[in-house]
Image 1 (cartoon, rainbow, N blue to C red):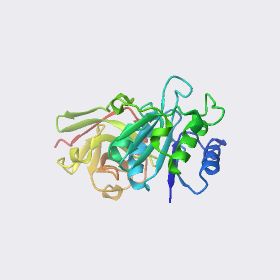
Image 2 (image 1 turned 30 degrees about the vertical axis):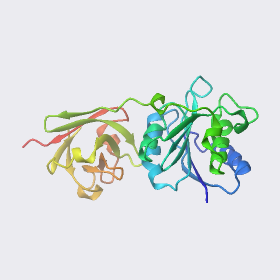
Image 3 (image 1 turned 180 degrees about the horizontal axis):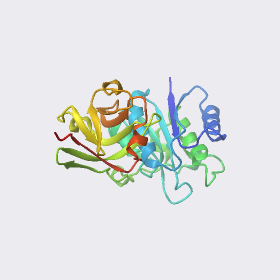
Image 4 (image 1 turned 90 degrees about the horizontal axis):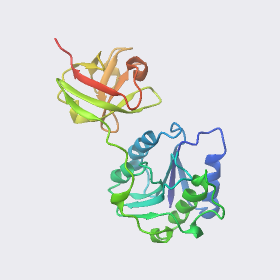
Length: 260
C-alpha cells in the first residue's frame, strides 16, 4: 500500500484541496491519501513546518506533500527530499527541512524540473495542483526520485531561522513556536528545560503550576508542562493560554521559578 499525505494552508472553503486529490487519483488511483491539515494560517511557513515535523513521524512511510508557499511562481525552487522515513515534496522555502530531520535526515534531494512529471500547463499560482501533486503521485507509484529533476545539495536548502531559546535567571526564555486549536502555547524549548524547575512557576510573569497535564492546575489556572511533541508548553485548565498570556507565535515567553 502506497501513501501520500497533504499539509497545506489552502483552507476548506474552495476547491484547492479537492483538485490536488483529483490529480493524485488520476495518476495513482491505488494510492491512499491522508489529509494532515489544510488550516495552516495563510503563508505561515513556520507553523506549517512545525505541524509537518511533529506529524510525519507518526504517518505511514510514504510521500508527504506540504504547501505553504507565499513565494509560488517566483524563483523559489520546488524540491523533493528523500529520507529514511519517506519522501517530502514541496517548496524550498524552509517548510520541509525540520520534517526531513524528524524522518532521519535528507539522503537525496532533487529540484522538480522534469516537464513530463508536471501538469501540461503549470499555473503560476497553484503549484500544489500542477507540480507537487503530480510529482507525489508518480513517486508514490514507484517512479525513481532521480527522474524528477537534477540533484540538489541538501546543504543549500532554505532553512528557517532558529527560534530564540536562552537561559534566564531561574529558568529560560523561549520563542512561541505554535498556538494550537485549544489555545495551548508551544515554546521552542525541549522538555528538559522544564524538568529542573520547581512546582511553582512564573510564565510570562503569571503564576503557573509545573505539571504533567492540564488537570494538574485548578480550573482556569495556568500550567506549564511537556507536550506530546516533547516541547515545553503552557495551557489553561478549561481556557486558552494564548489569550491569558496575550502571546502569539514569534513572541518571547519567560518560564522561571516562582520567588518565595
